[in-house]
Length: 116
Image (tube, rainbow, N blue to C red; front, side, top):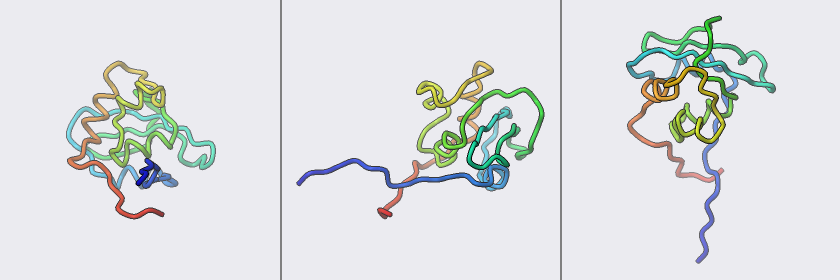
C-alpha cells in the first residue's frame, strides 16, 4: 500500500475584518497586521489585533503578509514565527511574530477528516 501526503484543508479569507473579529484571540500585546490581497482588494489594509478585538488602523505594521499566509495562521496549522522563517511573513518589528502567535494560539491543530 502506498500513501501520499496531500492537502486536505484550505481556507481563503474573503472578508478579513469579519474573519478576524470571529476568531478567538488570546491575551497579549496587540499587533498590527498589514494584509495584502490582490484578488480581494477590500481585504488590503492594516488591522490591529488584540484581546480587545480587531479594528482597521493606520498605525505602522508589526507584520506584513499575504492573505493566504494569514489563512494558515488563522487555522492554526502554522505559527506566524514559522511563516516568518519561511519568508511568508515579514516581521517589521522584532518580536511581533511571537506576540501574534500568543494572540492566535489555539489548543488543537486543524484537522479535516474528509477529502474534498
